[in-house]
Length: 96
Image (cartoon, rainbow, N blue to C red; front, side):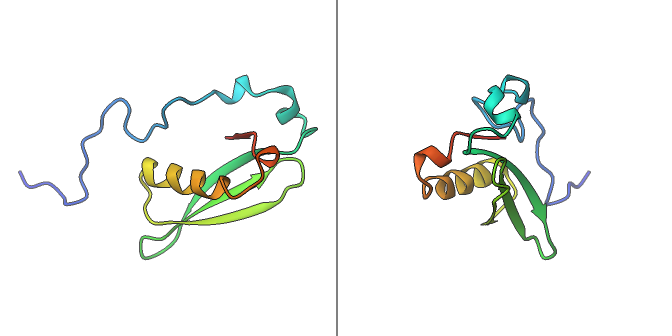
């Protein structure tokens, strides 16, 4: 049987970010938007294999868009980390 060139072997950890903290373990300051620096992220897919990560700061609702070269977990996480390092430390406390 011939496999598609896009076939990947699915493993238990496929697509998972390591060393994560569950959203249920967020500090209260992130939940009630009292302290700046807590971000929510998402990944949008466009045509022609294009991806953009969105980052929204929960208190100010500030939006950042990050162009991502690929949709695999490592590429997305590395792009978000690179972008987060450009911010002052007090404005980057957590990312969900």
